[in-house]
Length: 387
Ligand SMILES: [Zn+2]
Image (cartoon, rainbow, N blue to C red; front, side, top):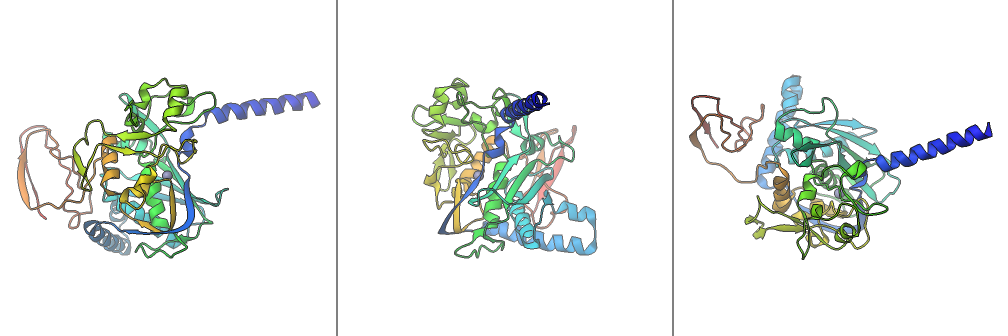
């Protein structure tokens, strides 16, 4: 009997070890840390988005009053599955963060979010989030939400595209107005950070025993699209060109990495500066949940601070800024930007998609800058946008 128990125990141990090796390491690519200090900052959404948020809130309220489920669904680009003991105000704050993102990037399909209200083992960890899957399209793997947007197709049925945890023990500020208290953590800011990870702000480089590697579960998968843009600072070597397992890669991810915009964004002006690259957070000691999938500390107190690895009290960022927008565009998202449009008309050739902009049902009247239009297969079509 003892021998059998020992064998079972050994088998369980082996199984556990095997499973732990196979678990996807994106599980812990973000553990957003509280600095525990007051770090006052106020960055609210641009006025145009604030207007849209107000109009959206009114439209959603009207749809709820009318009980029209189809209309209500149209006002929820994110479909949130609240798991655990979420309060009404916490739910509202997460919805608000999702709404802001829905006015920043083009979401042709509803993104399903599993949102867990949990007690984190480490009280300093505020939240975490991951894409539930990465789908290979061509050479690279894309977060499932982005792959679906690119293909305009729901690829995973009722399964969520992202899964996030929020720590129930943090001292949260749930208001959406940015009036966070001096010893509180702004929930909307944290939620915006985590959603950004779920949308793909996440690489698969990982510090692994026996040699650093990428490719998630078995370290042999194709790199993620985020990895494609990662280059060493100075020598400017693409990380995915280094040997997949070994000391060169280990050195690289602990000694400076740029998210280098190799094509689309070269020359794009971002916040008054030409955006060619963005330094990632790569401390000399690998920090699981912080390293590589966050922006460097040089971005503190800028809009790009949204994607640094830690957040202090009284620190409010409700807009990702143009640098993060640019990175999302590099990876494949279409953003709405903050430009306004004037009334105009045009004629497009058959089968073309002139702008890739998208008009979602139910947004008429207060989302005038976003039109998705694909011309019919034959003939021509005229179109008009009025501002
Ligand atoms: Zn993070």
